[in-house]
Amino acid sequence: MTKTLLATVMAFAISACGDSRSPLNTEQDRILAKGTATELSRNTAANLPPYIDRDIEDEVFYFVLPDRFHNGDPSNDNGSATLKMSQGGFDKSKSTHYHGGDIDGLKEKIPYLKNMGITSIWLTPIMRNQAVQGNVTGYHGYWVLDFSEVDPHLGSNADLKSLIDTAHDNNIKVFFDIITNHSADVIKYTECHGDNLNQWSDGAAKCTYKSLAQLAAGDRYTPVLPKGMENAKNPQWLNDPKYYHNQGDSTFSGENSLYGDFHGLDDLNTDDPAVLAGFIDLFKDLVTEFKPDGFRIDTMKHVNIEFWQGFAPTMVEHAKAQGIPNFFMFGEVYDGNSDVLSKYTTTGKVQSVLDFGFQFAVRDVLVDQAGNHKLAAVFANDHKYNDHDSNAGQLLNFIGNHDVGRFAHALASSKHNYSDKETLARLTQAHAMMYFLRGVPVIYYGSEQGFVGDGGNHDSRQDMMPSEVASYNNDKLIGSQASTADDNFDPSHPLYQSLAHFASVYHSHPVLRSGKQEIVYSSNDNGLLAVSRTNEAGESYLVLFNTANKPINIQLDFAATTAQAILSKGRNRLTIRDRKASIAMSALAMAVYKLK
Image (cartoon, rainbow, N blue to C red; front, side):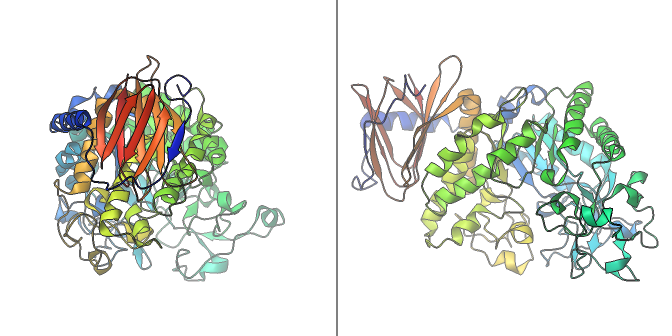
């Protein structure tokens, strides 16, 4: 593609090209106006092939914490009426507590998501949690006690089935967030938790990790189940300490990354064949009962890779037998190194992972202004993901989440002191990169309403419904005069509108979803990032980003004769004459062209 259509760079100049408001050429204005008018009738899930037949490259994900989204049933705010371990913890004024959002609330807002172009909903874990641990709660879902029952704060198994049915009726998929590394913090060690066993490892009482060498020498902790907690977990085998490592708290380095307790949570011995078999049976049952469209896998790199080799192919085959032919799994491997990430999609036999390399690079480029060669370097390693069921086009692109924090917060914290206008432009461009560079876009809930936050973890998990958390409500939202104290489901928000527009273009042009990507131009400085997307039939698109905060003019050799504008953000001009393309873009602009 690069040799025949978009060849070598002839000359370039990254310099001020006059007022960024200077007019486009007349023909280009007509094309853009026509494209904009067409987009008034947007493509959504309703216009796509049936969800059951779609490949992962055809999806636009929305990642959501149900507790922080919308309260459809206030009667379940305090959780279980009968199980003490899964009741309480409701306090809308605390960022660490339950806020009342639930499955029914999410179901009510499916039209809001559908109109934004969302085709897949990824939920944080929704199975029954230990509600309270010390001064924090399990509102996020990662402290599972019962892997067969929906957490009563969020609803019931029937409510979850109703959500999935409603989503499927709207041609939208639903993905579960699953955990095999750990379960809720129940097991205590007498050596460091004391006689009363009422301390939590995630609090002040840390249990120093005991290495494999120490265990071999007989230096071990004594695991104990507190009185009344002997049968707290389901399935029953999860209550037996012999299926856990019991080696103390992880520092997330070296061997303890695999064998230590993740923030005090009980770390399962996934090397044990009985644990693998138990989890396979457990999640088979979950697929059989609820028919989700796939799994996001939590803390994948903290589990031995042999576990995934046995688990992943078995789950895909079981899902197929249940009538889910395109069941898809992607893992959380918190690492930006493509060698580490690709290990799990090839050797580990899982179809995909969240692309932390992409997330880190977009932050380098658009927050730190480190130069768009950072993204080119990530894409140069895409071949490492190739095997019989994986490739880089299936990686999940994201720019912020519930752990790393929101991209808007990174911009707000930047040493560059971005203005409100520039922050909105950079945030919009970061999202455009998720859609139009290779990979599958994942919107973190609230991003479309300009949520900012104060960092990661609890500080990045604001309420879409009116919030009572003071640290959330003092944020100035991007692109809006609202605060998180308001109801934030505004379809007129400029970011919602941009994301809806991006999704419509993404859905309308298959080559932008699955076409082979090649870097046409990048540099060590901020400025032009140009990529081509091409399918096997030779259909080609050119995707352009100006990552600089000033206009650019660049000239490239060009084999195409015409370029139809498909999407434009900012002021852009592409003129072709004598097999040369002149590209002019205003600051932080982006554009997509279909080539002939």
